[in-house]
Image (cartoon, rainbow, N blue to C red; front, side):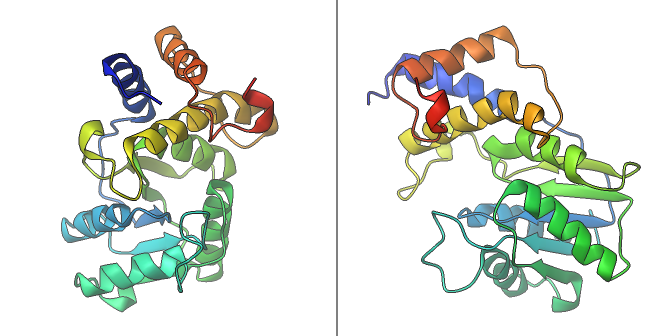
Length: 221
């Protein structure tokens, strides 16, 4: 699968759309959605050090890319934060959720049990999942008066891929996530969001070029 200039241009358009570029406000809690990408945890630590919130909640069990980890994603992220100097008393761990909706619902349940329902949150996720995370949170979080913003590691698209997660795989994932932004509101998973025509065109072009690994079977044709 060729990573030529046109493919990179189309992928950049999806990358830019997936970012919401929220202005962050001081909040009651930093809610971190687990994954394979430890840079997400590092971003949460950065925000904590800046005084953006007094607590961090790490959420996530294991997924396809973390099934070999001995601990859950939430536990791995929490260990990183503790090693970076965040006090254990400022960290909460939700180690059971296996998708974004569960990250939201199970985190709320844990906070409700501890009588710590926040009024303001900062959500931290991978860069290409900012938009879908926010849309899921707004739909799934039980408290409608909560104020939330989303952020991710401050990394450019060209610098984001790693040896374990190469550029081709990142593009596959971004294509799959864009499809879910369009399809999931009808399933009740997320709020609806506008997809500009040029972004949808980029999605269709990348799909035509074979970037379909992260699409559900019914969307690959």
